[in-house]
Every structure is written in C-alpha cells, then in structure tokens.
Length: 218
Image (cartoon, rainbow, N blue to C red):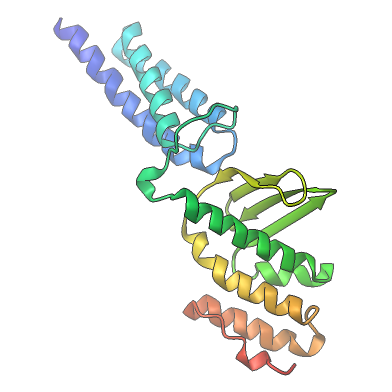
C-alpha cells in the first residue's frame, strides 16, 4: 500500500508538470490537440519509468491531457468545448469587438498601395485581411506568433473566430488602427513624409504614444 501510494503521488506530480508544459506550449500553436497529446504521452512515459508501475504513467497521462485541454486553447478538432479562458477575463463580447476592430484595420491596410502596407505593422501588430469572393479570412500576429485567426463565409456574414490568444498585443490595436486609417485617408506614404513618419513610430516605441501631428499638411 505505501508503495502504491507513492506511485500515485509520483503520477500526480508528473501530471502537474505535464499540465504546466502544455499550458506553455498549447496557447502558442494552432494544433493544440497534437501538442497536448504529445506532452501527455511523454509525461506518462516518464511517470511509468520513474514510478515503476503502469498506474503512475496512466495517472500522469490522463491528468496532463485533460488539464491541458481544459486550461489551454480550445481544440481545433471541431469539439465544442466550454470557454477555456474565462478565468483570464476573455469576455466573448469584448473579443468580438476586438475582432471587428482588427477587420477595420485590415480594410484600411488593403486600401493602401502594396509598398506602403508594411508601415501599418511598424508598431508591432501585423493584420492581414484576405478577401476571396464573398468570403474572407483574418490573421493577426505580433511578430512572435499568430494571435487571431477568423473567417467569414459570405458577404456580410458573421465572423467565426478560430483562434484568439489574448495578451499585450491587444494594447496595439488602437494605435495601429489610428495609423492605418490615417495612411488610408491620404492614399499612402509620400516620399516627403517618410522620415517624419518614422520618427513618429520611433516615438511610439519609446513612449507608447502615437503622435502624428507633425505629419499634418504633408
């Protein structure tokens, strides 16, 4: 009995380790189910070898897999899971509003000449809106990973969010929208405004405030 108890404790400890590893890796990749399964199997194997009993490996594998699903990003396998990030304040209404803002940025970016579009990602947020027929796809990244993926089927249809990973990048949405719409209103970046625009971007990186006042009239 004491040995069996020790085996169970070891399995639970390794399951917790697997959960932490899954929480670190799963939100950063779209194929969350593959990551969760791989980590669960590895931790289960380690638990079985260390504990010297199949029960240790089974407990570790189950804990790691189940907890990584419950606390990680929703699976991309079509399973309808409850909202997994309620404890992080990922309110559905707020998220939908954020997606609408990102679509707005994408529309402004698409109005620019192709050579001027990279300016809109200079603040650290890259928004790509691809429209094909009546459908459209939205992809947003911050230079480290893809944070938002959404699709719309049919013109005027509702956006279906497939991936949404909240974080510090959300603070860049407002300034990026301001910059993209400002450039779209002017039809792009003229040669005479490039140096001043670059200074405004550098100022944002230093102070966190986007000031385009020096560009008025250019």
